[in-house]
Image (cartoon, rainbow, N blue to C red; front, side, top):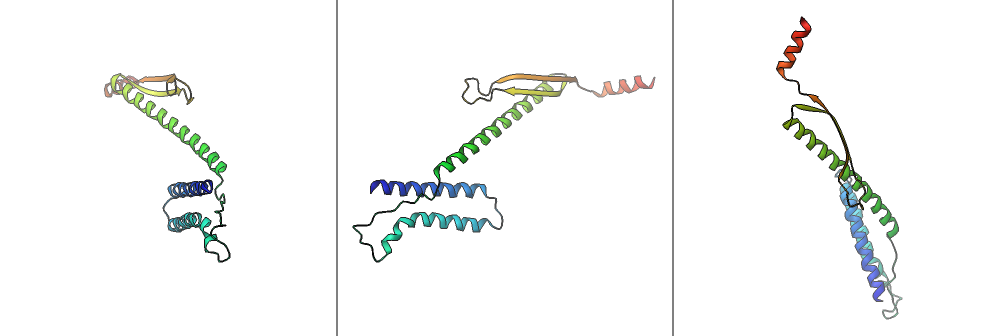
Length: 160
């Protein structure tokens, strides 16, 4: 009996987590409130489902047992969460690399007499590696900064 109640509570928690996840992903548009109503009904049905036999007239309370129905496929949820986790990691790494590239370009431009023409950056993307996030390869192509005096000289030289 305790295991059935435990499974019921786990099912409720899973459905509530699923509803919160869907609520987070759905953009706010004209159907948003209908989706929220549907998710609320889903949670209510999940909570009430094992209690429905109590209200049937032909069942004796001492013989009744709670029936557990697996409304949520946990393996499917785990698979989808792994896919989302991988995509999240890829996006995090991309944002991290972009941030480093912008920082390097800004610093080089500020402290040197050169402009960054091209910057290529590679990092260790293995999450289980001890060197995760460290720069493994950096390629920078620089060009001289164009000043007003150099532009004028180059124009004068072309004229003569």
